[in-house]
Amino acid sequence: MPKNEFLDDEYMNLSIPLLEVYEQFQSAADAEHLISVLKSNNIVYEVEVTQQIIEPAMERDGHLPKVIVKLPLADFELANQLVEEDILRNILEGKVNIRYHFLQDYTTEKLLEVFCKPEGWSIGAKVIARHILKLRGIEFNHLQIGELRVE
Image 1 (cartoon, helix red, strand yellow):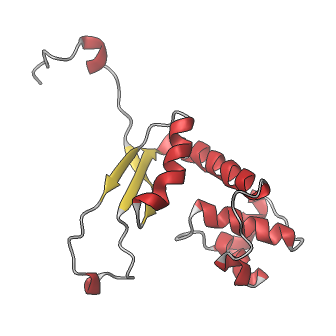
Image 2 (tube, rainbow, N blue to C red; image 1 turned 90 degrees about the horizontal axis):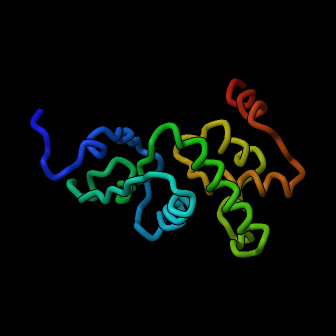
């Protein structure tokens, strides 16, 4: 591989982490909160804006993601924790009103399914579901979530 004369040796030896899809959104506005949390915590990320390449009628579920946020796989757990803490703090400080959130209409059983079948649920939805369950007197930890998935 020829050496790039515009980049110094130190830069050429930096390893750039492989970025994996962390979260997908329908709009840039929907992704703003996550991007803000990542920036403020110096987590490397990339935002990919997809182009619509198929007819809307051909979309499998009607929700083709338009904004994709990618992170190094090693940062997924930290990002989850930071986003969860930020959303919960906003709820407790009254900055986010969940009173009329659609998850309020879910039965307790349906809210637990958010954790039994987490695919397709955003981190924010999981935090809100957990908070609603807590308000209903139901608390659980990560080990119990694993048990719920087995059942």
